[in-house]
Image 1 (cartoon, helix red, strand yellow):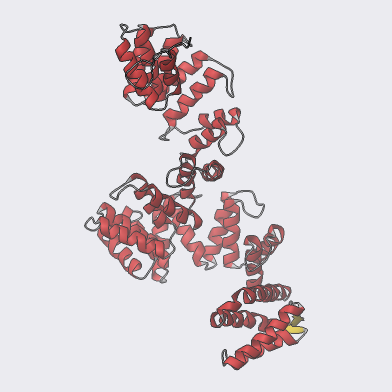
Image 2 (spheres, one colour; image 1 turned 60 degrees about the vertical axis):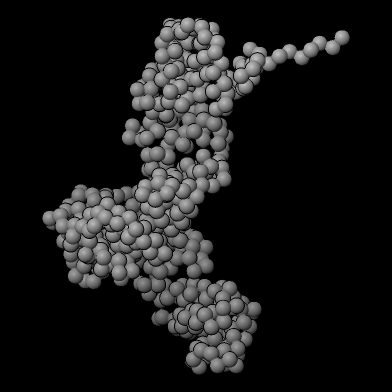
Length: 520
């Protein structure tokens, strides 16, 4: 037998407020009479009808719009009413309520505390009873490993297909994307195109968007950039943010339409205002590197933060790098480490290097040479920082940080890094020849590598080169040239160069330092 009434979920103070709001609405002539009655009954009676609880949530929402100063209080009571409504409906066996309550418990929404165990129990039950969106949620939880579940793409795929067959629009859109791009399942452009076409015929904007992508990229059909542009333009004019972002890229690249940076920026700005998480990330990239816009670290950082706040984890790496280097923001190593850690877990190939630097230098966390070596070793060859990672591995081998000291191994790392154009590695090879580390001393080779590195802006190499000229190691002795190089290195922040100048009796100016006259 189903329950029609439940014990009031409101405490004495909340009930008193409900009564006062009913009176206030009547005095001000606001809300419909029935809604004022709903407020009164919720505050007056110890037991309330389940159906009235849901109506109460709508009434409180309307009340907060009419009297904005009450919004905090109404939100608290609205959450209590909604929770009680869902719990009561679940006890009565309501399938939709079971799904909604599970979702709220998983993500801690509507004022509920997160409870993964109960969320999983409820969502599993709803999925077993055939609720399409519950099947979709279970698919998502298995795919990402939410609610204590182990990641399982096979189970996620099976559940997604069941949800799509059950009519879940979200599942159909996700399945189309997976089919088109081979996510978790074998790539099947024909099937993806068919799914997108079905969704488009049903009037689903996301289906129309991916159908346009099919025409743009030739997935399951012939490439037709002009048709793709027209489809995306229609979606964009209707405020579909994903389409606005993509059409901005088409304007920027001149695909399917004439190139127009101005129109591209306008589209991305509109998509950003509409809440799209990709558009601010794209804007951040453009300002970060100065791609057809004036380079601006501050603007780039602001856009990256906005993208991240909207759930775009692609923005985690540039935010971590910015906080690490102080570009567009104040240096904040703790924030840098956390962003980089998240970016690394997300799979960003560039994050690994900067995360390794955090461990190596102790930035935002305790120094950990073993972790540093492991992360430097894990930097992918496709990373723009691969050469730099090899240099740091050489430094670790040279000094015995995180691994046994081995000058020969260090030299091999330096050589591989130098071949990729890393100036620090070029300096390190010169230093190895200069000091005889892992290789026989050869001053001429040392000078050659120091010159390579110095020409590429490495001040440490410029310092070593100055020493070579001063002592005549590998080059004819030339004090004037030596001083010129040492001063250049010192002015670029090389402390050893400044110390050497002072030891030799010189400063950063041209004249030597004269001894102070002795006092009789």
